[in-house]
Image 1: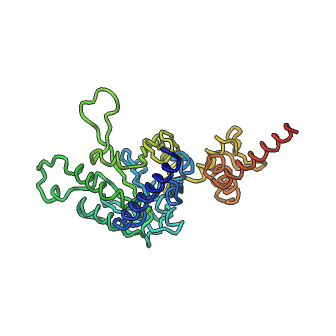
Image 2: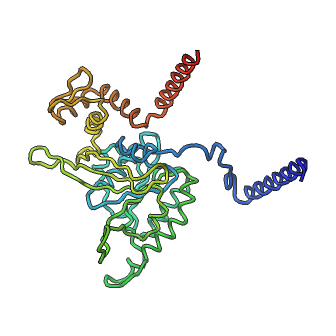
Image 3: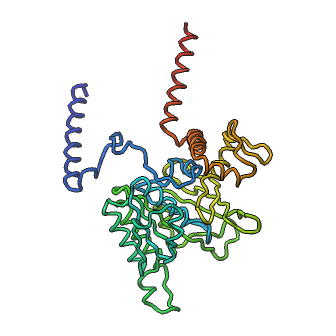
Length: 362
């Protein structure tokens, strides 16, 4: 086959492909098929910050991914709903609209307000059945107007047949089938609407497991497959003020991640009156990255003495927000979250390398 024949065949193939793409777009809409190199595909995944910058760094994209399904699971009172409310507060600060599907019927509005949630503009639904909860979530997602939808929790999504039945009735696999069907319907709509969908989930223990972890999550296995991000959140200690417990030390493990490398973890404080303690996080991470210096029980930033003990240092940062912003900016750069600064640093490094190369060549 000559070069002319190869070019002719390639032209014919391209025409046939363009016709097929046009037909697909006419039938199923613009964007039903696209080339990977196109701008709409090449853009990085958008994210909503979680309120803990080390968790944003552990996730790898700066927070909870938009256009994807995420799952946050853990034991009782480990901080699942708190983390979701922090995400909602951050989405609202960025000008977004949030919805909270409260299947557990346990949303504390006062606590949500303390975490920074604009409760007056928060959409809240307390559905009677699991089907109703998921249908409401689907309508909200398909509206293309919602930035984040939280469904709290999967374990509380009770199928209609179970509610209408008697207490002792056996219903095998109803919830798992419900979740499987719902996620099949939702996953495409979530991606097209660019909505961040977060399911919280509870832990169950499998009976008769001799080796490995007996823990599993409720609602079947569908959510494990469809979720792009799965976070395991645990309480690992108590924060005390004298004899009073004022918060929890929390560890979050990234169990599954389709957006960045998985299996990273982050630790932070959740205080009962403020949620994720931003100032405590700045001090802990500042010490780890040698931005804040710790000498004995004293903390200092440059020539400034912040205070003796962590609590006094936290008060110092609250009273000096400019210092807190400086520390956070340096931490974001160190953690790779400040992409513009990171790109500037990389460009600077490239320029220095070129100059050194020219000097060596000269």
